Image (cartoon, rainbow, N blue to C red):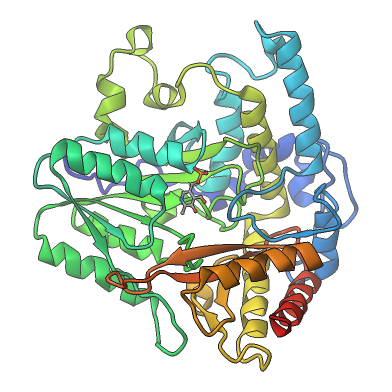
Length: 462
Ligand SMILES: Cc1ncc(COP(=O)(O)O)c(C=O)c1O
């Protein structure tokens, strides 16, 4: 693998985009979108333009009306998958009809081949990327597998990752280890268990120490921006800067970032970023966003050297995008959802998800009803995400009782959350289990207080 190129290929950022008239025109195809008032306005994709402060609960209540989630339940498992907004779903259904009725030309609904250029043009600046750096993938797993199988490694190379990764990373990493004789090192990252002080620097230090230990051998660092196990948000920008200083490539698993965190890829400084479109971004199922920094595209020998025949002269982004025939209505639904997020303001959505997460953490800790209660991500803004992980029981290794609690919560009160398992320390013999709560743009403070009350009630009867 050749050395990482530290130079930014483009300095155009998401923030620049929002300041330009081009950006105004791109976002939702209407300049009305970003300059709108509190008054609702209809736009291209059919959803109402809503404007409000991130702490205004009435505003988020209005936003929640854009979703068709079952009113008998409160859905708090976005970490598994999200829910398409009503208007996005309607357009998706219309587009499916167009494709079923006109499979040959799809009524030119999605532009020229590869039928995704208008989509990436519309959404890339919202992520602080250039349009030829964004690939519409199938999901995070697809993105992770594509990059890990696209890089060339040599025997003896080291890949650094963490002990809290998803199978979307572990599976292709295992294959790469077997195929090339690469050593994959699962570093123990700090896991909050209540009393210890954890800082962003602690995470950076874990990688810095390993780079020193494996002097000159580390070729790639890959980690979850937000771990699915505890919801801890790693200091991705600082880790990428450390990697770049050491000419090490970075691949981020951003399954939980896209649609929740206001991410700017150029500013983040990673080489590759694989995220989900169907989770926090609330696009259609089986969609994802893959970012490939322009100056790092040459690293993907698998794509560039493959015999694509007539595609040889095409831009790398097209080659990455072309994986046989695709589900264009689904990719358009992801695009529509991204435009809706850009219009509301990704910064506002992030702050709201983090506000609710902080509220949830506050209500769960120091709560007399949960004498054994334990959070697994610290209530520190920069390390937080819209995911809260918590175990109210004395025995943190008892999955049966925790799952009974989760199921009763759903059946008796309608709050839908899930459980996760992980090792606190890499050599733990037993897994620790936690409940995982997702808070997003269709929730309000009322939903969080309702959840905690319901949890207290169920806990008292177990
Ligand atoms: C951290 C992480 N990475 C990857 C994935 C897989 O995501 P996808 O279903 O989009 O492939 C998940 C799914 O929950 C996840 O939590």
